[in-house]
Each structure stands twice: as C-alpha cells, then as structure tokens.
Length: 300
Image 1 (spheres, rainbow, N blue to C red):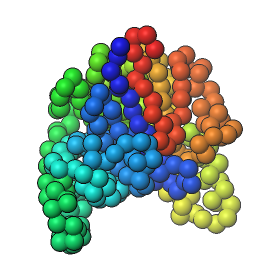
Image 2 (image 1 turned 135 degrees about the horizontal axis):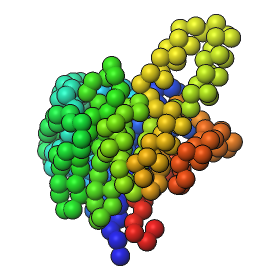
Image 3 (image 1 turned 90 degrees about the vertical axis):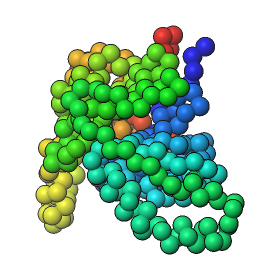
Image 4 (image 1 turned 120 degrees about the horizontal axis):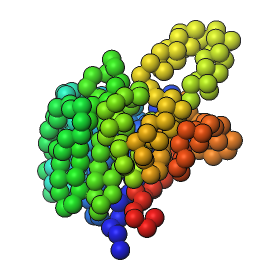
C-alpha cells in the first residue's frame, strides 16, 4: 500500500481577478508532512476549505516574489498560530524571501503583541516565529530539503524580469511531482520534468487572452489592454506546455495559474485546453481551487 502523496490546490488563479480562482497556492502532502508552496491572495482561506488544519504545516516554500504568490502569507501565519502551532515555521525561497517575511512580520508586530496580551499562554510564542533560508538558483535540480522520505529540489525557471524565480521537484514514496512556478518554456523546466509522474504547470491560452485584449480596447481601456499584451513574454502557452510534457515523458499533466481566468466548470475549461491532446497523449487536468490530486503510483 502506497503512502499518501498528493497536491492540494489552494489557488489556481493569476493576478487577474476571478470569482472562482484565488491566487497561487498549493500544499504538498507526503505521508503526514504538509508543505505550503506559495500563498497568494485568498489562498490561506482555502486551507480549511480543503480539509487541512493550518497548524500541521511546518514548512513553506516560495517560487518568487510576485504578489499573487505571497500576499496571503500573513493571514496564513495567523491561521497557523491560532489553530495550535507551537513550533517555528521553516521557510525556503529565492533571494528576496527574507525581505518579504521580515516586511510582513514588521507590519504584524503590533497585532502579534495584542494577541499575546489578550490570549496569554493559550498561544505559544514560537508558533508565530519564522525561520528563513534563502536558496540559490541552479539550472539543474538540486536538493535543499530532505525529511522522512520527502526530498525537495529547486531549479531556476525563466520568468524574466523576475529574477530569481524557482520551480520545485518533490520526490516521495518512489514518485515524483514537479511544480513549474511561473515561467516561459525553458530547458531547465524540461530537464526537471523528465520522467515526472505529475507535472503541475502554469498555463496561458494566448488566443483567449487576445480576445480579452480586444474587448478592453473596444471599451477604451487601453492601459489595461497594453498591460495584458506584456503577459505572454514570461508565461508558457498551453501548446508549449503540452509539447514540454511530451518531450519530458510526463505521466500526468495538471494546469493551474490559468491566464486568462476561466470558470471552474463549463465549456471554457474545454476551450482552454483545446488542441493540447494533439501534442501530449497523456491525461490533462485543469485544477480547481481545493482540488486534491494524488501523484500517480505504480498501479495508478
């Protein structure tokens, strides 16, 4: 019998507003270990909705410092603390992670003091402590965390001008999952995804984005349209995602960080992935907020 190894999708959206999808966030569940991967707008509030107690998360990793990947981190810290955390949270991420954490904790310092004054010993002071390790970028996956059979490796991806930006490769119970982070098509992601049982990849449908741009131009919102025109330069189109998955021999493909945002169900989902099967023969799934997707095993 295999151990639990799954990815919980807290938020599958992007910076673009969506009624169905919040900012980027995941939880890697490996046995009894829970690792938070990014925590964008609204993602922390999905943790309980996904059936996970925030206090069981003792490790967090970040891909990069864009707001849609970090801004719910303060909310997560308080949810974790007030649900019973008694040990510091370990955080790993690229250069800039320390500044991000320090800035959030500085903003929260008065509230932390108020909570301790109000609740006293009911809240353990270590439960709001954060210990940060910044990890250097590498073109090929390199390990930075190993515990109880879970091995995490980082690799650099191409999200220029966001430098550094990381993707992650997780191995547990003989299975491997790769999370792309935000990126264009790049050799480092192709290499890291080789033979992966599950690839979680961000995805841009360029044709659907162009429709949004045209609609904005039609109503005189030229600034927003021009900003949208910059998006394809550092995100990966669905056709390239499919080609990469095929070249890497990925067993199963899951899309998230969807651009443009689409509803969780309905014809837009099928339209978003239309044509991908021509390039990748394996299973393709569009993740929804609070989905729990297992990493396939030998008999899956």
